[in-house]
Image (cartoon, rainbow, N blue to C red):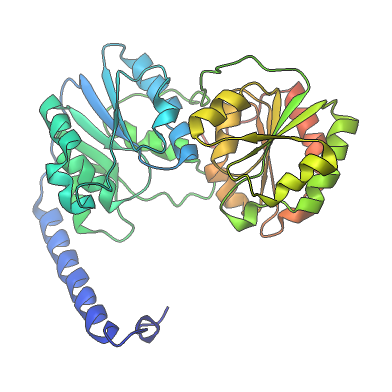
Length: 367
């Protein structure tokens, strides 16, 4: 976008130059402080750590292997995790977490009210040895780390260098490796805290609330990203193939909205609509299924981590899939960039057959 394309309203002729000046000055302050700032030593020993992983279900699932290896590396390490109300359910039954904290950062005037947020005041009183932001760069996450206290703060730096980077005593550069999975890049952040991590890292696993019912498949097509929406007419063909070639006797359709167009499959193909008004309800019900076909998104990460052999269909690029695919043994991903409809029913049926007979697959790039 050119400079003049940003001038969409009359006020922008004043607002945009002021913002540019502000960014320029802050960038200068950042570079000056960074030049003369010394390296802070790691706490020795680290006995209490706070991991911060806000928003997104799939991202939350990908933190589970890191929690597992942290606890195994030092059983005496006290691991706290800060989530938000949406993704907290992923961590509620995760082994290795000593205490889960749920932060609604939209109350108390949002980021303006962070210094006065009662939860962050409670966290400061715990006196963490390390506070680690898991995931990519976020100025809000950096502020949360700052107001959580801690002797040593770790995260991911911004792409161009921003004033918020100074919050971190150590920071991993933004990941630009085409095949580096988010679990691997998050592990690199933890290594800055002096932790020794295994190679390869374990799979992401969640405790399964119910045993699987043979022959029952979970169909999870509901995703916000348009590129990952498989067409209705393709689902019609797919359901026939799954019953004919994969021995599927029952298909449960998981949708968040009762008005979803795919509910037409109930009458046409005899699928069973499964309402899921919460992530917790989804986990409970999908765990009863034996296998899953899911559009690329949070539901695919959950079904794979629960141990369901899962075929993930995606309209994103192979590069993106390599970074964000489910980190689980029981998952295989099929992708067609901007052309998800080109994935055929036979492709999905064959992939499901493979993943149900062999739940192992290469981990990709490891540490």
